[in-house]
Length: 331
Image (cartoon, rainbow, N blue to C red; front, side, top):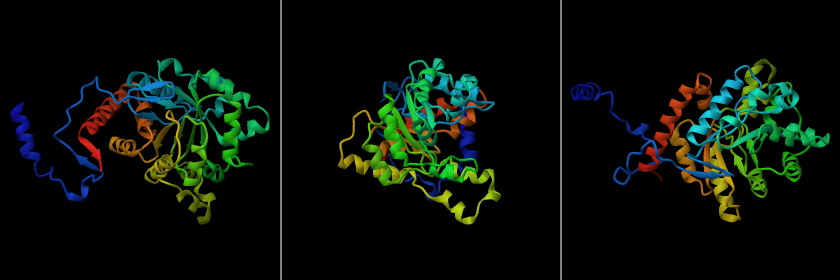
């Protein structure tokens, strides 16, 4: 075996040359003061009533589709095994069709880990106007959820042929929901992030967390243009390119933290453009507020195959995160 390894080293030496432009310059590499992690090592963080083993959030994805049940069960099992937390995809279809409950009813697979149901701001506005906000409380209870995610998506709704229209500012709807529903609430965007004015407004509310949904990941406004590309003018298409990436949003959140009082239990979920473990580690290390990082597409890729594929992905992912925490420091 040693001879084979040495032969590989000789054969691959030239291919393994590093080029300066490929270096990840975000980190200082410290090879002297860390150690290789074991399978028992974790990076714990408290998130609401949940104690997560790793600062990894499974971002909202799917529900009410043919594969949704198996995908959500696999994700829930992963949360239980690896000590993660997750948000369900939009639960609007479940409210409209209670027969879809098996697609979303996964809390029983999660052990003590946290599950958050999810509804769009347009639906909340409608329920408030119709005096039917009680359906959200019923949704939370039916799913045994630990709280509610409100997704904010004005550009997606505007670009969507069958999209809803906001009749009042989203911040007013969020405030009204907080007043009437007593539960932990997370507010998230869906691919274009939020500007400084919006972040400042959210920091003033008693939220559990803000999820970035930043520009750089899946962009649902762009997704709508891809569904029916022939229906859009150049002026309309330009709207898909506005937004804020995670770097910019985190800088603003740190500035708000420095200039105001933030609840010690408040958290950031940094998502949108988190392509690798190092992206996630970089952002949570830079955050002055306790933070986790969120991914969706990577989890979906493996969860739709089978649990074993998702399990192996997470073993590699968490071990790499632990290696980064031992040997890398953000500059």
